[in-house]
Amino acid sequence: MDLSLVASNILNPPVLAFFMGMAAIFLKSDLEIPAPIPKLFSLYLLFAIGFKGGVELSKSGIDQQVALTILAAMLMSALVPVYTFFILRIKLDSYNAAAIAATYGSISAVTFITATSFLTAQGIDFDGYMVAALALMESPAIIVGLILVSVFGGQEEKRDIVWSEVLKEAFLNSSVFLLIGSLIMGILTGEHGWEVLSPFTQDLFYGVLTFFLLDMGLVAASRIQDLQDAGIFLIGFAILIPIVNAAIGLVIAKIIGMPEGDSLLFAVLCASASYIAVPAAMRLTVPEANPSLYISTALAVTFPFNIIVGIPTYLYAINIFWR
Image (cartoon, rainbow, N blue to C red; front, side, top):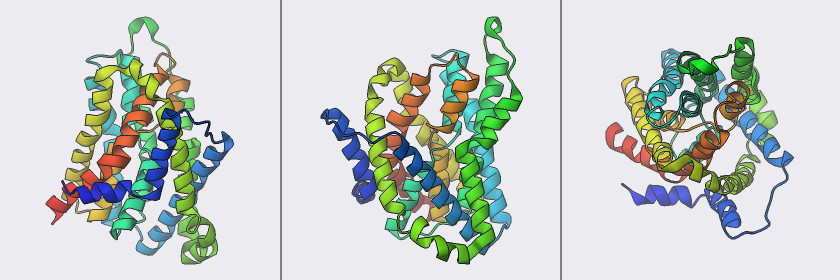
C-alpha cells in the first residue's frame, strides 16, 4: 500500500483535530466542548454538504448513472444488516445483533464528509449526486433492522412494533430531513444559491469540520472504556466488516461504471456505521439492545479506523483496479 496516501490523510487538519481530541481524554485534560455546539456543527455540516450536492445535481441532472448509484446505495443499506445480523448471532442475542447490524447498514455522514475533504486534497473530482445516496442510505437499514427483530426476536419477549413510529424515525429524523431538505434547496436555487451562500457553506466548511472532529475525538476516546463490554469478537467485527462492505461496494461501483472519486465515496458509505440516527432509533424501538455495544463499536472503532486507515486504503484499491 502507498503509505503516502495514509500520511496525506492523517496530516489533514480535521483528522489531526480528531487525534487532539483523543489525546485530551487520554492525558486527562479538562478540554470539553459545550453540548449544544457539536449539535449545531453537525447540523451545519449536513446542511452544507446537502446544499452543495443539490447544486451539483442541478447541473448534472438525473441520468442512468445517478439512478443506478442511488439504487445500489439503497440496496447495500438493506443488504448489509441481513448478512451482518447472522454473523453477529454467532455471539450475540437477536436484539443486540439486529441493533448492531442496522448500525452498520446505515452510514456516517462525518466519515463521508472527511472522505470528500480527502478527495479534494488529492485533486480527485466527485459528483454531487453522491449526497443523494448518502441521504437515502439511513432509512432502509433502520427498517431492515426492525424486521430482523420482529422475525428473530425471542418468542418470550415478542411485542408489537409500532411501524408508524419506526417509519417516522427512519424518514423524518433530523439527519435525513436536513440532508434531503438542503439537497432540494440546492437543486431549486442552483448556481445562484451557491453564490449567495458561498461564504456560509464553503468558506466556513473546513473550519467547522475541524472543530467537529475535535469533539468527535473527545467522544470516541471516552467510549474506549465501553469496548470492554464489546469484547474481542465485536472489536474484530468493527474492523473487518467495514473492509468487507467497502470491497463489496467497490465491486458494485466497478460494475456500474462509477468514476474514481464517486467509487471512493460509495465504498466509504458502505463501510461506515451510524452513531447518531440509528442508535437513536434503536433506543426507541429496541430497548432490549445494549447501547454501549452498538455505539462504542461504531464510534470508538469503526469511525477512527475509516478516517485514519480505511479511506486511503479504499483509494489505493481503486488506484489498482480502476487504472
